[in-house]
Length: 342
Image (cartoon, rainbow, N blue to C red; front, side, top):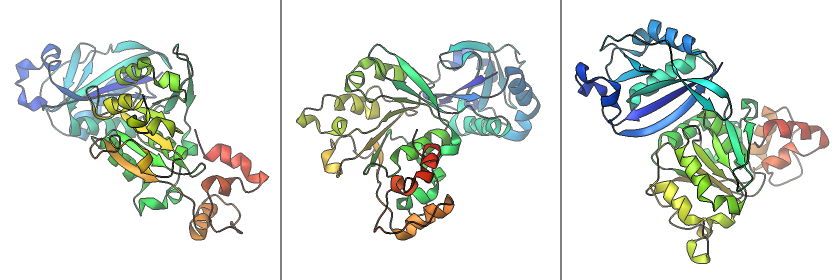
């Protein structure tokens, strides 16, 4: 059975509230700065028992975080409260009927509880939801962690680990990440790695008509399970508004406008040659976290990748794309399907 962990980061610490005020009606009025959902492969009973038995000792004594089970709550170390073993249920479009545990509290302490739960239970695989019809038809694709990228793919990170980069982006206030580079240079693999590392799910569409429909953006912003909007091969969608790009205003609104939410990320990949071809407002500091330039590898870099995957030493070229390294002969083609792309 799967259980959904719904967590909300509040802008106030619960320790500021006297115990008699610790009720759900009062707490519901706290301003919320992030609302997210993460799936665990566990039963409700397993999670409840673990938190009852271990949470105070392992996470620490605090009144800044509490866990909500149905109408009751557990305040860690501060307020004595009974826990209802009956948790809420919801109908999930992907996983069906499931239990829901709610965690609310100050950011750092909520993250400590999540970290503790992640160390005890396996998380659900991330998935992408591909919208292929303006009538709302979609298909789900589960992302396998076996196809995650490795650090050798991205020497331009200058020694920073992929995990560190992903965490910085995930925790940042900036919504937009722009990946620029020729086809076959690892942009999709980079996105896959981010989604798996952060346990994020993504909406994906390649149809301009669908992207122009407010339904997709409304679905993305209102869903607690969709943390990223991925626009691949976005060359035409990134053009300046003055050139007739009618979609850009939607991206700007979601990225840093009236409807923006810190937990929502927009990731674009494109084959254009220069950021001068991108609407300047999209890559404004504060709205855009980073612009990453992907390219081919020199001989040393290509050999490092080949060594990691037990492939033959690449020879005969001045530079190599990631796709070329994996497709250099028919024997390696099966590996490409396993190691690259969605």
